[in-house]
Image (cartoon, one colour):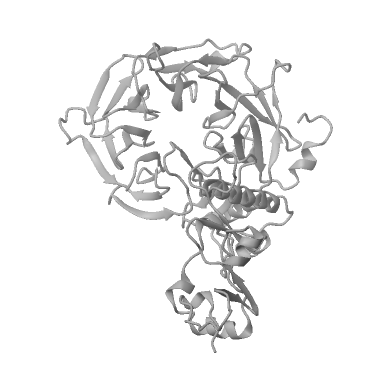
Length: 528
């Protein structure tokens, strides 16, 4: 007689003899409701272990729908021998089911949300341990520095491809190092969580925004410098500014010279209206002998985004994205041009070669605005327009102005051909559901970076969309602890060090290309 197993989906009818108790059989042992009452457990038992005969039956029925169904999301690491039961969680270590409680429960940890959080934390710790290993898996099969060098000497690899692939190898080997932020006030260390960091074009300075515990935020500038011994030092500028308003967007502005100012979008709070402020970078340091220069504030409330134009024809022009409109303003003359849109403009960036502004909307629309065509009315001023499936959180225009990267709240990152208004590449793996998360691109190295809502930093090959590296956060994941990153091949100036800078919680981390960075940093004369 064929024994029942859970993969068959139905238990055959068995005739019970006299005095036989009602129940189900597990091997040669019978389990009944009376046994449940004696042990005091109401949780279901896991299915019987496979015997050779059962293995044959399972292989014969492997084409059935029940055998090919994926495991439960709450127990993704569970063995395939444990089917999903609604309302129950299978613990593979204890080899049994436990009842789940609906919603949130602080007394009993067996809720689906808590189990998913526990599993995510376990995976994060595992990835952190793997990152500490001296040798890491190459991003592509057979890719290593020695092989690339041999192909280059043999003329089998062009110079551009060689440089790009070497960067991919270096990115896969980066290791985390914590940086100590030097400050003139050493008695008052930073205890406020980083919210956003944005580097200037030379990556000598990084503008920082920190959340303050009593509400509002503070912002300032950190200076980076590299030494001949290969170490990176960080110094916080003297002057920090506090505000009870929220900083929505930041960009560096070139008013007097490259990156001489910082453009801020501040959202109003209570009786304090919102505004867009143009602040000189020298304002944050008492030791800087330069004059503060232009300092102005524009009463533009509820601004979601801002961008500064670097084109010589409109070199003092900036834009702000608001609810259902775009404002383009000349910072010197105050001349303003307003464009009505059908949705909130969440992100903006100007092209480099031509005075064209690209905008990403909450509706998923991406459109461009040519500043040279101010006379057009209605919707005809939109030079090009295309759509993604969800709200756009970030747009980045590549150097030749013909391609644009766009990320949305579904976690999709696409490379668009602006001329044909069609996507030509997609970068998979990014995680976002509702957060306002920027993306970064480094064209010389051929890299794309994005921090997801799951607090993982991911790096892709810009050319073919290959996921090169996934970096877990050093701290447990939380919605208010999403890391902010800056990547550059010259951190600290023209003679700087290549690598990734990560700010999370109140800590600052550095992921250098140099694998022996730790030994170099511990040499006498370096302060870390």
